[in-house]
Length: 133
Image (cartoon, rainbow, N blue to C red; front, side, top):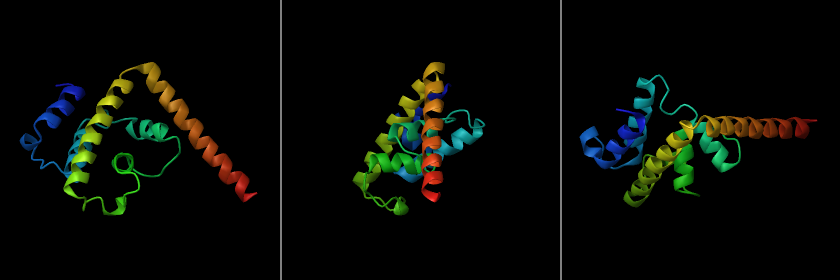
């Protein structure tokens, strides 16, 4: 089963994978799947999310997804979301991962993502260097 089919299968039948529709277990299942595939499924996902956001971040991908899904929410308490927040965050997670897989499988799009990610990081590093001077 390829990555896209796996993600679509989990999205369609979460209970079959032991999920209850909440964000934390869903994100952790995808993280585990990625680890089992030696980081191949979501390699570049964090960078892709940062490029979408347009600013560097030290957050892991699961926090970045939550920030995008629930702007202004207190992500420090991401395990204590309301049922509506959980549902929305899970929907957003699957949508983002599927969009990312499309970009990941397009070598030109992936190269652009990494180039833009490095540009954003260089800008951030340049700002800190100038601010400290």
